[in-house]
Length: 115
Length: 311
Image (spheres, one colour):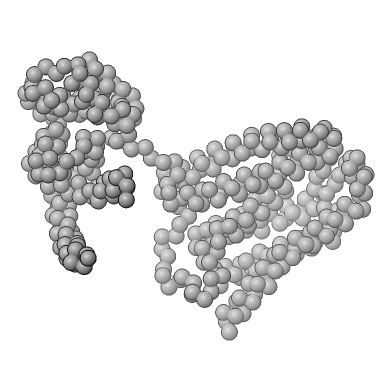
């Protein structure tokens, strides 16, 4: 498999999980750059070209609330999980844990079978 | 910082007007945060600004990330869209070839001019048809209308040993093309003035035009039936009975046209005299009889399938 193919599959694998990661990180208010740093600290490196549009889309779907605040001499848009977003996060977390458990046992079996 | 303003303005130019201010404002805040981090909260150098903007990507790319472009035709409609294009363009090409051939035989203007006549006429019509079909699909997509039947039931799927129950897209579009072609042939002369019509060296004879205009409801029913087939995609008893009815009417019409006299009226062109009017008339009669065999075959085929399903 080429590096390009691997990158594409990795991107596909991460795409759905990013929504969960962003929603979970926005239990506390964050502006764009601080959210990116927070995710990076938690081990999820996501480029700004993906993160900022994703956050906007989630806000448009009313999963996040947002407000402009002044700080350090300029304005920033802060995002935080809305009530609807919190409900979705709960549902997605359950789904993720179920999937993770199933995949864990599948991958465990696969690694045991590996010659 | 002037470079940042230029960059944001370039991104905004690629965005829909109602989103420019908000996205520009947010983008600026994000870029300034990145610059702060890079320059450790000091005044960033021109090189650092350039580096951050380079990393963000081309303005058009950034704009598309915020507002992704919607395709005119969604992937699930693409097959139907392509078939529609092939069939409509095919019908237009056939009509253009027929028209140019008649003009060529009448005037004997050389092969190159004949090819030019076919191509220029076809390209003009094809552009119009392509635009109309694409806009039609895009509009129906925007309205959320689709020919796909979402209320399908697995029980209606054909048995494995009866693959004929699947209706292929090719068959549906071939029938649609036939009806569309006939509708154009019958009703196109109605759009011409009497003077233009008189100039035509080949036209439908009066009795054929009258008979075919009486046949118009059947052709329209055929078009509606094809659209229903597109939605269902499997033969059922009602569809088979309807197909038998439509094909029987088509056979009757073709036999009537074959028996009732000349299909076409022709001004005495050189080629008509060369071939001979009688011979042309006989060829058209045989052509109609042979054409009638196709719907007749479908009548027998569907009747046999219905009888087998009952027994």
